[in-house]
Length: 224
Image (cartoon, rainbow, N blue to C red):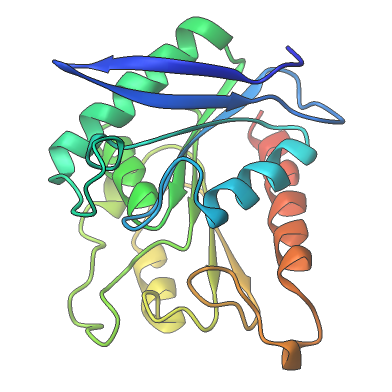
């Protein structure tokens, strides 16, 4: 499939928008990533669009979508069960329309957390791709969001910046040690929660996304 697709997807009595961006080169046969945005993001926010572009360029088809609160123009995220319900509806549409050979779920920050909670209750998927997982609120490392992680049974790749205030490296490594599945933790040196790096790091944001896309392709080829 070579063209983007736009969908309006029923979620209970509501509907939300989704876009499928096909792989642009060197396709990983039939692999699709359903990517959820972060709490302050949307289907077209800068970070989500940049990640989608990077991943399609490494051979992965990407479905991005709006959670219902964002579709309605609200800035206040829905409760987690409602986020998950929306996510599930988008995944089922992707299965129906695209018939992926490998289906990965995940996303940025809150969107990735929603996917991880779905995976923890054995929602059917082939793997979990987490981008800037929000392990704890900034400044509150005691409020960990890791209780469900040991219940995940599918392979996981997680990208976090070493300067991310939502994810203290030592605490994340400790959380991963409790997980029984194959969890690949990939630290992005000097990157923040948005995967932005300062000029002093010696590289730019595009190079960080190249690192993400390259590692993701290798990981998907491994789990397939």
